[in-house]
Structure formats: C-alpha cells, structure tokens
Length: 159
Image (cartoon, rainbow, N blue to C red; front, side, top):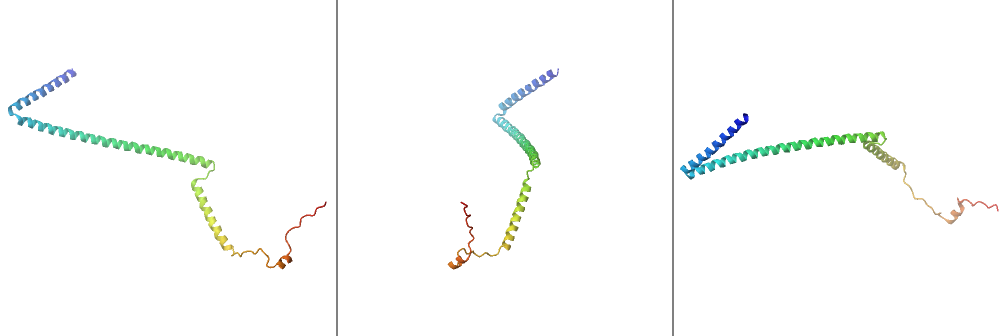
C-alpha cells in the first residue's frame, strides 16, 4: 500500500504542476507580456541560484578530492620512505657483518690519513737540510789518478 500512496502523491503533484501551468497561461493571456516577462525574470533568478549552488557543490567536491589525493600522496610517500629506510638499515647491517666499513668510518679514516700526511710533510721539511749539488767530475786529472777506483776487478779465469 505504500507504493499506492507514493503513486497518488506523484499524480497529485503532476496535476498541480499542470494546473499551475494552465493558470500561468491564463494569467499571461489576461495580463499580456508583463506577466510573461515577470515569469522569465523569476525563471532566470531560479536558474542563477541553481547554477551557483551547483558550482559551490562542485568546487567543494573538487577541494575534497584534491585533499584526498594529497593525503594519499603523502601516505604513499611516507610508506615508500619507511620502506627505503628499512632497506638501507638491512643493507648496512649486512655490510657490517661482512666487515665492510661504513661511509662514516671511511671518511674518518681518510681524515686521519690526511692529517698524518700533513704532519709527515711538516716533519720532513723541518729535518731536511738545504742540499748542495754533488760534484761528479774530478777537479784535476791528477786527483782522479790519485783516488783509488771503486770498481771491482773481474774475477780471474782458472783456465
């Protein structure tokens, strides 16, 4: 019976709309173009209000969707960041178990080597006296003959 009540209400509503239209038509015939213009003006007002409401609803829906998309993007990025951190931690632990030094340990070692090299250069500069060039040729032919030769004599053959 509930369907019959709905059907009756729909019929009554359709009948009222029909009668309103006939009444508007009769009134228009009586009052002429003034009534027609008033109805057009009222219709335009209703149309503008409906369009504004639809645009507001659409902009709110767009804002909500943009918010959802942003939240989803942030959550996805956060998930990837966590996954990346987990991966990096596991790789670091595996490398540590294999005895591979970390990047920080390598950097510290490199800094120590550079400091030691600088200290060594500083000490070498302090210890090293100013060198004079060596003279390779004898001053006089007689001095060369007087100096014994450092060359070894070839071994004698027993043949």
